[in-house]
Image (tube, rainbow, N blue to C red; front, side, top):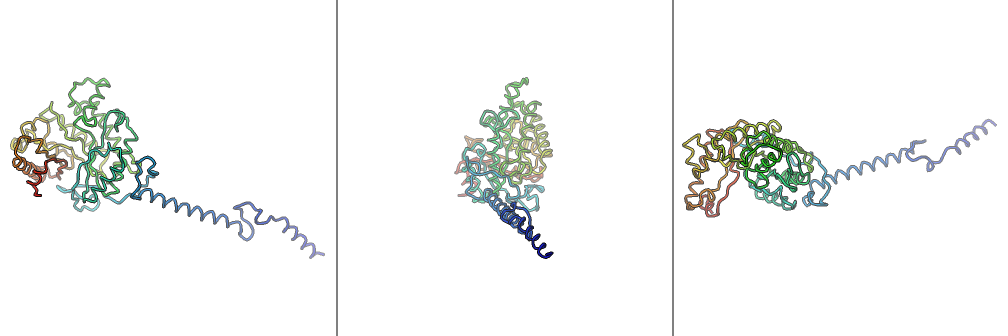
Length: 392
């Protein structure tokens, strides 16, 4: 009887226990059978995570992707997937790889229009062509001031859509192993320039003349420029997730394209502005090189250098190659060369001789006086002059 009773109780307990198919999913049970769905679930999550990682890699690296175009792909900032690149630095009169100290040889081109391009495919193609030609540096505008389609619509107010174009330019440059010289404002009226800053200050009630040279000394305008610089240097790239000041694909910041101050020919306004703004850039970003963006004209301070200028007019522009480039926080000198426009009436042989002396004088002064690198960042000449100077 007792044995029968035990059997009966066992049978009752067995009948009361729910079948495995009736148990709650994911719950444990006798024999560990309930852990199988959990293991399957974990494997599924692992597989989904792996597929997501593949998607991120694909979206960030696939060469045919055009993420800036409408519907061109998901933008996922993934800094660690960016190609490895070191900051540019300098050692004496030489550019160097800041990580290794090895020489960095600069050869490149100007494409000022990249920010204003409405075709991401054209931007990408230009940078790819530069890479295929063996070029390593591209100089372009990082400004567009005034108006609804500008980067800076009004002081401190920016177009996110236009900023994303610049994000894409920098992102594509790094993908193509190209470094960028980014210029922060224009001396000329194109794309707004210093004239737009003066208009903004006048509209805000500043007592200014119509001379655009107040850009260099009026406190309100200098404040506008500093605000712009801060917004630029602290911008987080929407494609890479990297802040501009931490982006090695930026070769250098250029304070202004071809600054001139004709109302103050002795030079103190421009010289003080260069010193102040170069120091301000370095206070926010000590990773990158800084240059002025001057054309290279010599000022009246050293009379024996005036003969290298293309004419007497060049000494009245407030610029002085040696003085401007010697500022503490300016890392390298810049020079432009336009013999055709500077010497419009000269014969071709005269232009070639002039260009040769122009180049030699700046190379010598950079090496022996400034002790800094020099970069010829703009030049323009007809083909005949190029052939005469360098050969066919």
